Image (cartoon, rainbow, N blue to C red; front, side):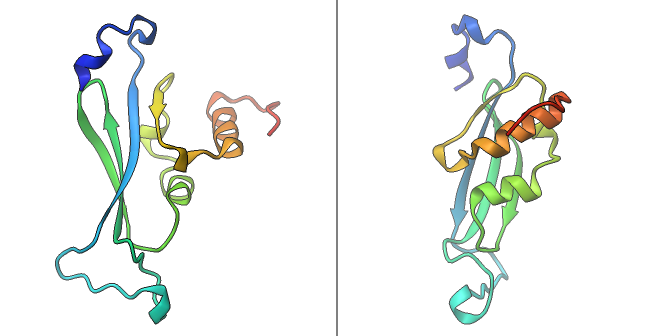
Length: 119
């Protein structure tokens, strides 16, 4: 996939990071307890939130979550200080599950030091 970005002059040398989630139904030695049985495990399986470097075509990092929480909440709670979320001038590719304009505006203001930013 990295070759797709070679002829896109407007991208320059910006980092291109894709964030996507997938679910794995089972893993060795793990016995889930779902909410309907009093547990907190996700019926969809283990959430794997993966960060990809699109220029190199490799995964950079993954966050695994077994609790039944949404993908955006994983970003907000667990990955807020991740080095992959603070790459200066990076272009991120995400699906619509990550759309939370107030969060992204606040995050941009925090990283850029823009204290006058209104959400």
